[in-house]
Amino acid sequence: MAFAPYVYKRQPVLTRMFSLALAANHLGHAYLLTGEEGVPLKQTALFLAKSILCQHPNPLADETCLTCTRIDNGAYADFVFLDGDEDTVKKEAVAQIEDSFSKTALEKKGIMVYVINSVENMTAGAANAILKFLEEPNPDTYAILTTRSPAKVLPTIISRCQVFHLRLAPQNEVKQEAIALGVNEEDAELLSNFLNEANLIKDEAASPTYQFIRDAAVDFLSALTSSRQAARFAIEKASLNIKDKASLRKLFDFVCLFLSAALAYRDKANNPLPAYDKMIVGLANKLSSPSEKLLQAMTMRQEIESNINAGLLLIHLAECLGKE
Image (tube, rainbow, N blue to C red):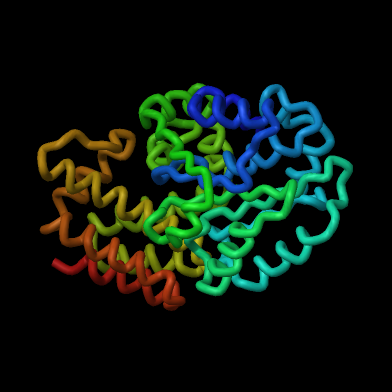
């Protein structure tokens, strides 16, 4: 997916400042991208990395040259990507960057770039190691970091970066753009709460994993409007295929969003998920205290990081939400 249109349209300040720095050959040695939930920080960071290394930037990455293609395929020797969303970034991973980047660049351009997504998800040892690397940057070495939680990042790391706060696009505008790309209204409405870019919504909507988790959340909450036993059966069935933390987090996020919509309906506010109106109205009428149930679900979501058994956590969710 070409990402340049998003950056040019949605992030004009970033586009202008980074383009000028590239043209003047005056890049900062480290950048930190921040933004609210939904803003595509990782994709933007990767695009900026490609812009630094691109063979034909115009003014940023063309996304079609051999270098850009190799970066996309993880086959560019002088580029390293660590994803804190996938797993905690450990000191050993940072040490590998330091070791590789202390040597002569292998590629013809002679520039080395590393991206760390969700830099707040680093061990203390990794954070201290990356701080030292930022304090003593090697020539022609550039870092691009991202975080949604600047308060969780060492202030000394932030102070050594140029910080860009990415703008959040209007949700309904993103939703309509996704529908124009062929995404059905239900998926566009749901995913626009989590993804702030239409093409990313399109890709996610086509994912079998997303479709399973969406259906699991809808089936569970629809069953909850019927009976506690039906809800437990639905969640036990779903738990058989939810093994990883990312999927479990996504299921809880969907459940929390639907409960929030039910709470809004009960409070006489507009239903933020009209495509799911029947289920939302059913939840609002069934649950004695939607605000209490939402708080319980949000609290349980936080327990995911403590490596609690997914099946037990989901059964606990069904018991709590089904209790009158």
